[in-house]
Image 1 (cartoon, one colour):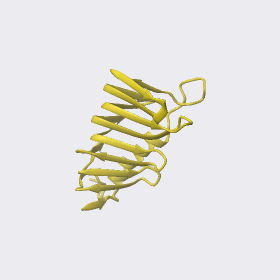
Image 2 (cartoon, one colour; image 1 turned 60 degrees about the horizontal axis):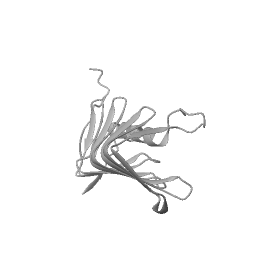
Image 3 (tube, one colour; image 1 turned 90 degrees about the vertical axis):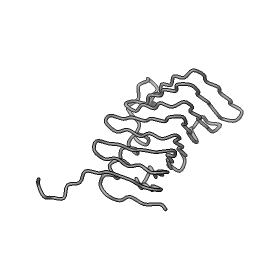
Length: 160
């Protein structure tokens, strides 16, 4: 059963994910484009099929966003634009105090749909959202969670 979360806590988490993935950090190079730094034990590039595969202790940094996983597959078009990303093997993303973790994370760049599977957990401060699968529409901030569980701090206006 899928649950759509609409309270303030999940919206903060969705806003965080959208900020991480849609609002790039300031450019670090002279080209005016943001820079991604990636380290891994190995890298295989297949230009004919538009794929780059990073394997083994993958660490990526994009401004103040960090990603760690065992394997990162990047698919790109003939112009070099990223089409999709698939991170697997203990995926962990952090930006400031916000964290996300899952067995896999898949981002379809053209649609802006992010799917976290395999024990996905989103955490920001006291807010926590988990389930079997978390799907985030980065454009709208809509989050759909299968087998949803969450814990959110709420202000009920009591002033206590």
